[in-house]
Length: 224
Image 1 (cartoon, one colour):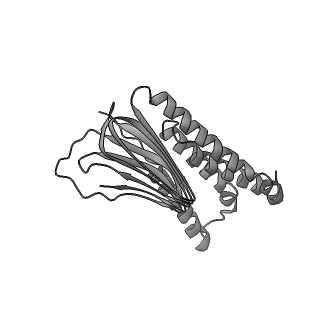
Image 2: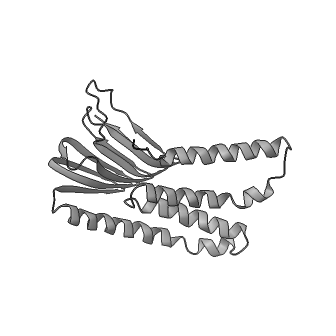
Image 3: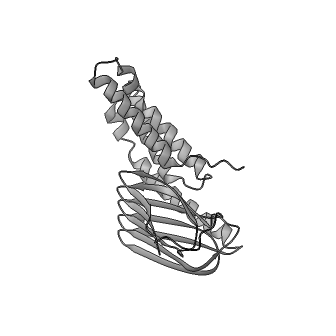
């Protein structure tokens, strides 16, 4: 029997519950938890690493941003760095974002030999893509804009097929047939991820599409 791994959302929820319990312990005066607050950033480092591994190393930018920010925060709380020193390196986040775009293009060239691999990038604007026939995967990125992909005429190869998403102050929309079994594992940080399709009468256990990624101040949605 195959064991289903925990999704990134479940891990994030568990961390939020843990922080809430510690807060309750502190406000009720039950115990001194000052040491816990010192190492809170390490919890988010673990979350970022888990999200990276859980995506099958397909999603890079979201987990790396989480690890980088949380790691810098941890170094500040341990007095290895000052906040001013950390701020000097914020352009590295832009460098990491650029590297993720290049990686998406590389995956597109490799996968396109076997079938259709789609990349869509919406920066301060919109990008709409539609594919038909054999579909091998996609890499969708929205930064202060939108990226959408229509899969109603696509045929997944080697189910499940994977779609990687990144939504930073923007939105990613995937239009998938109602009968597809879609598994979502998008990590939302002040964002959202949802499957808004109507329930299908043609249900099956095999997963057709796996949507992974990261949403910060934005969202990833599945529509029909």
